[in-house]
Image 1 (cartoon, helix red, strand yellow):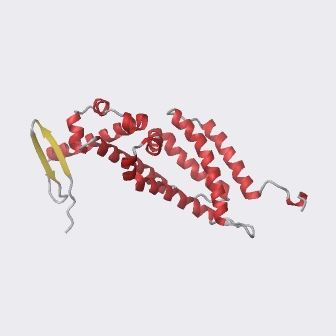
Image 2 (cartoon, helix red, strand yellow):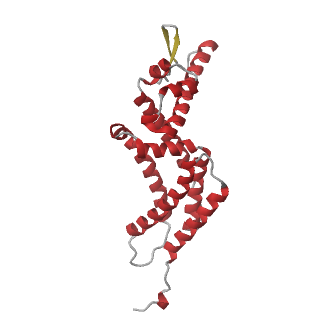
Image 3 (cartoon, rainbow, N blue to C red):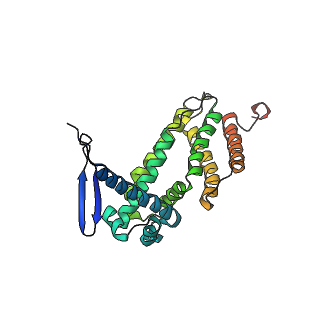
Length: 242
């Protein structure tokens, strides 16, 4: 027998009420409203902490500012999360889960390799354009997270990298390689070029909360040109001595 459990913690002065919700039970409207408010408040704290950690990193983020922005007491934050570290870890998990959910929804584009890869990266960029704080937090995680905490988020970071590499590999498998070309070496070259291109537009995102279509079009054009150089080469073999 499956029972879906949801515990909502509500504080009235020094009294704490716990509700265990079974969907088969017809709870009062007041009880359901109170639980809904509790869930929304916790989400608000996580959304606020995402913005703060994205802007200032783990060590420089002040939980008092999160309290003020979220409109909650410091006691409530620590009641939900227990510590600043746990708040950070839950915020990181939310951030990466949002990213993974969106990336998994991206469908493979039909057409040649360059067109397919550009289509994928355009969808990726759309997410970060719409959610710049997610990218900023991702960079904070990689650059400014203390080692003892980083060890606890490594698996989530690996999920993002493995998903991105898996999608790239699916496109890569559609290519017809010249005889003698080492696939692993070719993949490393493509990854290096895409990484260089990504660093350009992500730097723009990291410097501000806006990213203009003109900027992306310029970067996409450069990416297309570099990918075509990889695919079709840079030298005219008929004119090469040897």
